[in-house]
Amino acid sequence: MGEAFLTRRGGGALLGITVIQPPGKTTYLRGERIDMTGAVIGADIGGVILPLNPTAWTASPTTPLTQDTQYITVTASAGGRTVSTRIPITVQPYSSTLAENTWEAIAGAAELGDAATAWSVGDAKNVSVGGVNYTFRIIGFNHDALHTSDAKYGTAYNGGTNKAGISFLCDTNLGPAHASNVSGKVQMHHTAPDDLSLGWDNCDMRTTVLPDILAAMGDGLPNLIRTASKKTGTRRGSGTSVTYLITGDKLWLPHAPELQDGTNASTSGIALGEWNGVNVYAAFENWTGQEFFDGFNACWLRGQCTASGEDNPGNFNRPDINHGNKWAGGEIPTARNMIRPGFCL
Image (cartoon, rainbow, N blue to C red; front, side, top):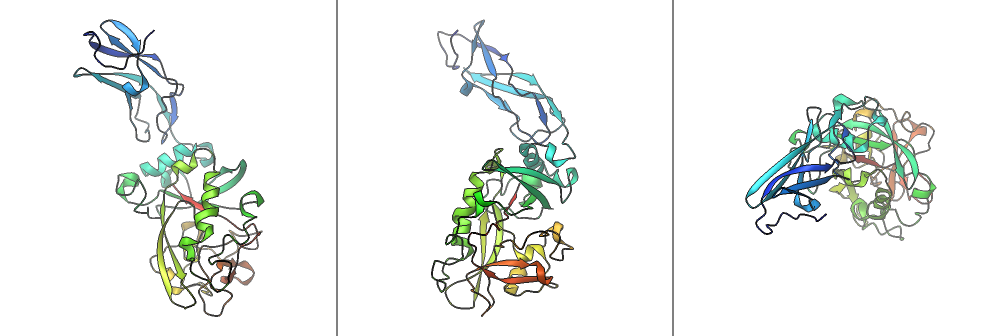
């Protein structure tokens, strides 16, 4: 049987289209997008049914599905005539257990503005990183601003708020396969301790290590994760002045002002201006420094040690759970598995 491209051939008229074979998936979770894999659409051209080339038809809706969606509409046009047909589908509600939903459905919930009513702070789901499962936990809803470079910025995403719907953080430090052999690669500065020219925006942690982790994530997550706007203080050169950066990050490390209110925290090693305009995640509103990091010595925060005379100002900051609400001066991350990334949907 031939294939129709819907160009006029020998005067044959496009009378209609029909579903020769439905797509393999016709049952969805709310928030997922339609998947037309396996669908074969036929055109009735002058009374002869010919399978259409997939580029000759379109399917809608293209937005995340809601439970009132009952059909996929397939449309084709030729010779000034537009015809359509419908494929019945079933859209089921989200599971209240976060882990039972697909990442596509969870991302759809974030886009539809449903996430905060569907799940709770602390709910968790595994993410495969290079074939190893790590648990990522919700730490806040409608918290992180979308960066202006994100494709959803300025759109109706999450009610047009220009905010990500959900923020996640890995609740364990990534293991050796993903975070260990990074000595000399992830510090804020170059190999010389007095060269502080990099800062968070240009350091290898941000430009190499975290993108490598992102690329190793499974379940299509790299294509779903939004680019968040992150504020970080950075010292340049050997001076004590601090530059406040706004970077667009898909994967990021947590930062002290996002974990504890600066009015109550010991701010050792943190530039005080970093708390301005940065809100604490809901998961840490009553945090004392112990709960989240229980069982771990520390994890690297994206903040640079900025206190004059305290350790090396080019080093990463970290929490110090052995001294209550204190942010340790910082160290150079080497082969210590202390990378605990977050991301937004």
